[in-house]
Each structure stands twice: as C-alpha cells, then as structure tokens.
Image (cartoon, rainbow, N blue to C red):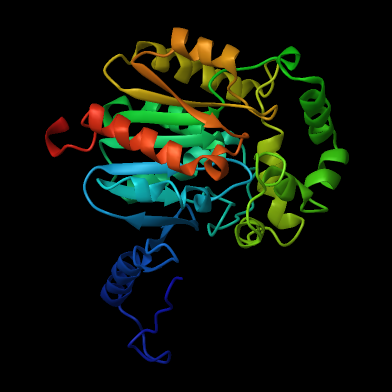
Length: 332
C-alpha cells in the first residue's frame, strides 16, 4: 500500500523548488517500500509511466524475475518461490493485473513490454534470471532478446514460443478462440461475467484451486471494465499471422532463442490434459530450435501448471539454477 505524504509547508505558503524536489525524492524512496504478504514476501509498488506496478520481493543477490500470464497474477508463484533459497526473488503483477494499476491503454503485448521495460529500469535490474508462464514466458523471451547482455538464464513453461496456425488448435480451442475474437461475443464471455477467470482455475487445472486462492485471482477484476486486460490478452494469440506486429516480435525473439548458446534455458513440460499449450510436438520444436535448452518433465498438469505441480516446478528451477551456477556472484 502506498503512503500519502503531507507537506511540512502550510498550503498558504509558497513551496520552493527545492522542497518539491526533496518531496519527490522521498516519494520515490517510499514507493519502493512495502509490507509483507501472507507468505512473508514484501509487497512493493513502483511508479512508472504515470501508473504503478506492484511486485512481491524476498531475498538478495542475483535478481530472479517471475512473470505470470493470463488471467493470473504474482499469486501463482506462491508455492514455487519457497523452493528457491538463493537470489532476489521478484514477482511483478503485469500492468492491468493483480495489484498493479489499470491505466487507459489497449493492453497489447507491446504495451505490456513497455511497462515491464520501465519497471526493470526503475529497479535497475541487471544480470537477471527470467522465469515465465503463458504470456509471461513470451514477455520474458522478448525482454531477453532485446537485452541479451542483461540475462543470465531463461526458464519457462506453458508459454507462447512461436507463431501458430488455426490448424494447430483442437476443434474446441478453435471454437473458443474464434468466439473470443468476435466483437460482442468476446465481450460477453470475458467482460460481462467472470467465468473466464473461474474456468481457468477450475478447467485449466487438473484439480480446481481452493476457494481462497480463487477469490484472490478474482479480486482484481470486480467490474467489466477491470477485465479489459484479460480480453486483450485472449485476443492476441498469434494465429495465421495475426496480430502482425506481435508475430514479428515472436519471430525476432525466436531468432535469439536459436543463437544464444551461452544463455542457459529451461523448459518444464507436462502431460495428462487437453488444455496444455506445449505438447510433445511443441516440445520437439523447442528442442530443435532453442539453443542451450534443458527439458525437464514435471508430471501431470493442466495449462495453469503452477497450481497442479508447484513442488515439481520449484524443484526443477532450483536444480537448474544450481547446475548452471546462475545465482553465483562470480557468474559474470
């Protein structure tokens, strides 16, 4: 929660430029402060681009940044982070999601990348390890490709790693995607009701999440307008070249994934659910097209695998970090 400041100067007296600058500096300092959440992590707020991004943080050392997808939040990492004992663990809520602000923007991939760039810059993060799920994985790949000298490693699961075709989708997935992209129909599905979130954490998992966790996922989206970011994400799946700007970005980071032989990467895979995004065929594509890639099977799960297999995911990341000494101070 951000704190409010009261100027020591009465309203009737003129405020000097120096006083204003000192107040602004104090505001920037307090913007990085926070209170612990139920897991003992600090919840912090960073003001960027006229809005704010919230993140949880614990630990010190090498920055490990955990990026969630749609319709999730930093809450998804709650059972994974305790497996990691080294490093500065940061889990932001993407703009428009979780505790972060909901500015009046289109919530395109480019918008999310722009706000993330500003957040990375504000926190002066360097030599980071990125971990991403769903759209968070795509954002991680995109950021890494544009900042290759600042990335130590990249781990991901159930994410968008390449442009796709409508023909790649199952009949059920194609019908759903077509409905989401249809004006009026998509708004009814996502904005007018909260079924999109509820279905993600009851049908996109093998076991529905606990009621307390479902309430946490639902809390940031009490109104149709608050759910606009979710619909925007749902309409951006890169299918048959659309949206073109996003497809170009994905093709660009795919080229970096293929040539970055000195950057360790980790793909965690799952089985046992029709909702999985990275199946055996996509895993084979990753093995062939992504350099320096370790592939670790993590058991049965749905697309929102962090809810089904947090222990396996946490253990896989921790082991990968150790094997590649990614949190060692002397790494670079």
